[in-house]
Length: 189
Ligand SMILES: [Zn+2]
Image 1 (tube, rainbow, N blue to C red):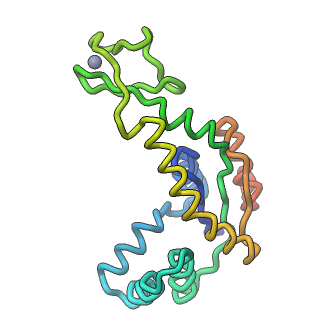
Image 2 (cartoon, rainbow, N blue to C red):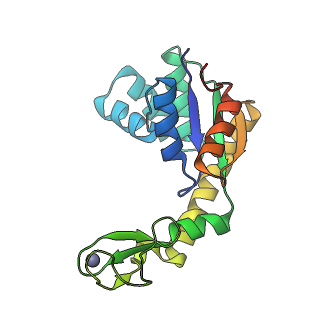
């Protein structure tokens, strides 16, 4: 059977990783809905025009409404919306941990891929630094913007009974299992 699920979650919540592997497991395409809408609008298809009308109307839930309209017109029913709940502290830890070598550009992560010697590149011994984009202040602002934009979306899907919140902080396989349960797709089904 086909599964139609939207994954929502802040930057750093791991939804891209889960979407890719679960889409593969379920044999369904993984589509970034923002890209899909932009492409449909650019191509001026009937769906695109309908989506544009909704997005132009503004509201904070414009994207959700545009998606609904596109899905309805295409005869697609959404099975579930999964929200990745990850604490702000954990998101900050994940998103501010990147370090880049000044000499060769190689990327490390203090949590998931630390260098062998603190502050030094494994490949060339160069000095590691933090990009401005990865600084705590920048990341905190990104998270604030996300939260502000997403709160109405969550309300929208909660009201429609489609929303399931899952704990997004555990190991990748546990998070995947929580999503399978939320969507009703057991392993090997
Ligand atoms: Zn290096």
